[in-house]
Length: 338
Image: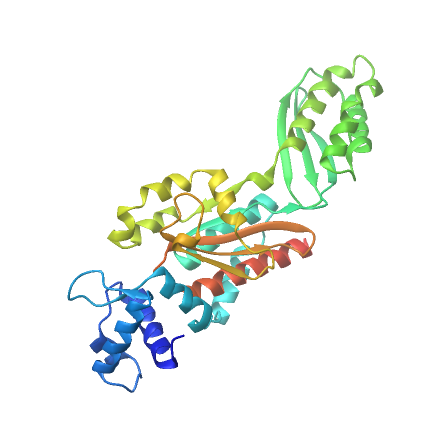
C-alpha cells in the first residue's frame, strides 16, 4: 500500500502529464504542487512508484509518465469528479432539446459527447425490453406512391416509400385498419406472426396493395436497432499525441466494426454508474491502447443501452467522467418523459 504522500505524488504526476503531454520531473512537481517536501524526497517517492509499476520513464534522463496501473489507481482512489458548471448543464439541455425521435436523440447525443469531451463518442441505440408496436400509418404521396410508417413504444420511427398500383382511399383505409388491428399493442415478433396470417382478410383486388405493404411492415419490424452503434468525433484522434497516433490504425479499423463496438460497450456495468476501462482492461480488439468511459442509460427496467467515449489513456478522467454521467442521465430522463 502506498502512503498518502506517494499517492499525492502520483496524483500530481497524472495531473501534470494529462495537461502538458510531457514527462514529469521531481523539480516541476515541487514547484507546481503543495507537496511540502524536497525534490530529493519526491525523487525517492517516484522511484518507489516506478518500482511498483505506477509510473515509468519513457526515455533516459526524462521525467516519468503514468502507466495503466497508475491511471487505474488515480481513477479509483485519487480523482475527484469535476462537477459540471451551470453553463455546461444548460448547454446539454439546449443541445438535446427538440429531439424529434430516437434517431434524432441518438444523433444529438453522440455529437454532444464528442464535442464536450473532445474524444471519440459511441452511443448504442436504446432498445425497450418490452417494446410494442404503437402506431402504423399509410400516407399517400401520390396515387401510386405510399409511405409506410411504423412507430414502436420506445419512440423509434421506421418508414419506407412504396410504388403501388393506383388505388383509392377506401382500399388504403381498409388495409391500414387491418394492419393496426393485427399489430398495435403487440411485441414485434407477435405482430409479425399476426401480419403473416392477414392476407385472407382482403379481397382479391385489395391484395395488390396489401401484399407489398405487409411485406414492408414485416421488414421494418425485423430491423434490430439494438445492433446499431453510432460513432462521432473520429477527427478528434488527430489531436492526440504522436505516440498514440502511431498505433492508431487498429483503432480506426475497430471503430468501423459494429460487432467490435458492441463488444466494447458490452463490458459496461449495468448498474447505471460510470464504467472506466483503461488500456489492456479493454478486451475488444483495437482498444488496448485506449481508455473507455461509459455508462448505461435509459429508464430503469424499460430501456437497455450504453454510451461512452474512447480516447488515449492520457485523458482528463474527472471532467470526462462528469460529462458522460451528465449526458447519460439527461438522455435517460428524456426517454422516461417521452
